[in-house]
Length: 236
View 1: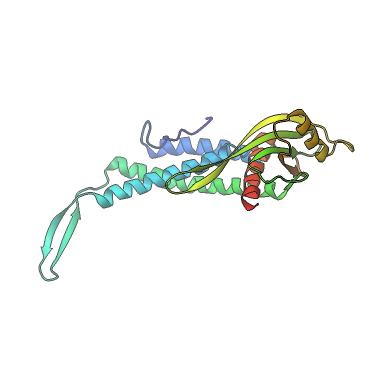
View 2: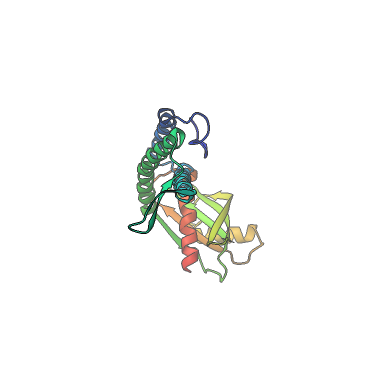
């Protein structure tokens, strides 16, 4: 199977063995990609699935805890009212609860595998500014240098999003070009070429990500590099 639908636990047949088969088939594929250092989009998908499962369990518990109650008897001695829940889990709710609990544990295990690989790749990665940094660094260029390959050039734009609970930065990148690094064509020279070719910014913020081991560009290096860039911008 290619992907696990976000509503996989509640759509179709609600059966523990069937849902277990769907989940394990999906996680087997994810594990294969992780072992080949292809982390994305699967690492992000696991986080979303885990969050959805927690929300399902919490929502179920909230319904049960907040459901109207009735008196079961009055204890005059303690002058207290003993309540009895009207609602009880039916077979479907019990099945969903069992599926959700199993899925949470399995996804956490696979997420841990992906996170360890993420940390290993990040360990082999460095990020630094190229040339003089301007005052504004929420847009500019990102250079990614892989071993024995061209240097890949991306433009980037950082935006701030806010909601009632939090604000966060998101980054959008777009491939621009690929330059070959030589003795004369240094990273500083590449920045100069970009300024001459794309004259919209006089001194664009430019960052270099160097990776000293071969990892997939789109499925690992670029997503991790984008997160490192946001962290560096936030710290500036």
